[in-house]
Length: 279
Image 1 (cartoon, helix red, strand yellow):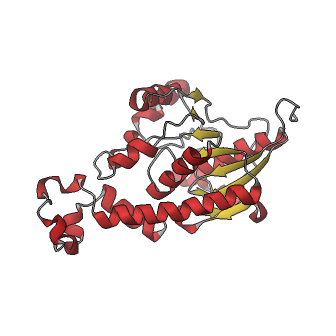
Image 2 (image 1 turned 30 degrees about the horizontal axis):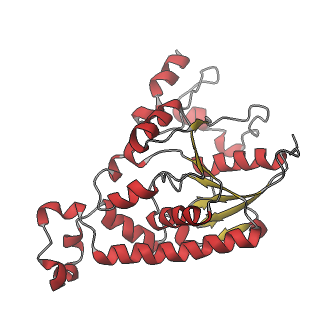
């Protein structure tokens, strides 16, 4: 398929915390980019880690969710009450009287707000440089506006879209309200504003009808459903020697069927449907 006059070739900017390895987001982004390239578009990549062509990539280390600064923010935002982590905060007389031990997990240290803002501004500069260098005309945001693994990145992306009106496809894989870890936090304001944002130039895409209903209930926006799919026209490569003893190691004979469910055991994955299918 080639681009027609009504859908002229575009420079499309994929944005995520990483485009590398075999995680689901990276694999699905690769599938999308392949289809878009076949239509005549050109794809570029902004991320914290990348195994995409270097000449089409802008790597900003702070965009990676495991960057030390981002990991430190996440630890305080979702893991530990800040009063127990940093006693220096309690020595600040301007906030000491306002601190309440009973609600410490819901209170954000001022220094964390400042650090989020600093990193977001730095990442915004990188995004603007990315847009200018590759003349980006459309964003495809891969899960970076969905789950808050990098709050400064989500804030930076949201503000760039708000400031430019950049046409954007926000491709959502799993929302923060689906994961127990993110339910108790001190960054609710950022979660409501950026994960996902509800801006007029954003078209939301989810991977299931269940996710579309949840997005509508939680954010009041509609979404297009595009399921994750496998390219059955191109079967996997022949297994190498590393996999040869797998059946024997698992105690399976050659004539027994081996069914794999490559997902986590969580309700939204619908494992009961896979079990019924196998049955």
